[in-house]
Length: 197
Image (cartoon, rainbow, N blue to C red; front, side, top):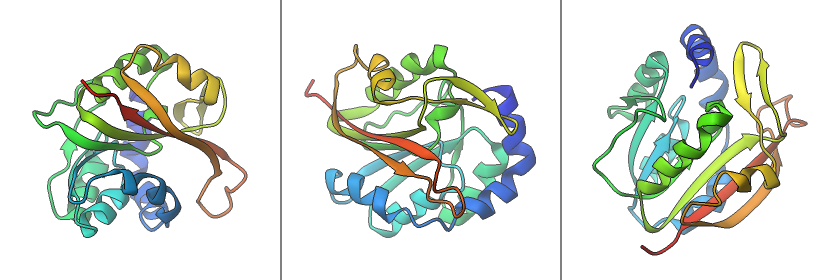
C-alpha cells in the first residue's frame, strides 16, 4: 500500500469500517469456501474491517489476518476477538503454510510495479493445491481516485502477473459492487489454485 493509501485509511478508518463491516459477502464466499478444507487455515490478506475473517471463524475455519492500516487492525482485532497483524503485503511474514488466501479488494492497492512480486510471495505461503481468491476493480490503468491509488485489472492484464507462478485460474468472473448505490462499479474476481509441488 502506498503512503497516500495509508493516509486515507488512517484518516477514514471508522467510516470505512462502518461502510463495509455489514456487507453481505455470501455470494463471493460461496465461490471460495467450498474449495477450502473444513477447518482449514485461511490468510485474510488486507482484511480491512475484519468482516470476512469473522464470517470464516464463525464457520469453523482458522484465520490469520493482516492489514496495512493500524486503525483498521485495531477495529478488526476487536471484531474477530483475536490479534490482527499490522503489515504491508510487501512486509508480511508467516511461518504458516495456508490452505487458502482471501484478498478481497485489497491487492488493488499494490502498485503495478510491485504486484507480480507480491502475488509470488503470497503463492509461496500456500500449501500445494491451496486456493487464492483476489479481486480488482475492472480496468487497465493505475488510477488515483478519492485520495487512494488503485491498480485496475481485467482478465487479460491479470494473467500477465501470474504467468511465471505455479498456479492455474480455477475460476474468474465479474460482479457489480455489493455496496448500496455502487452496483454499477464492476469488479474482476479470480480464484487461483496452486499446483502440486
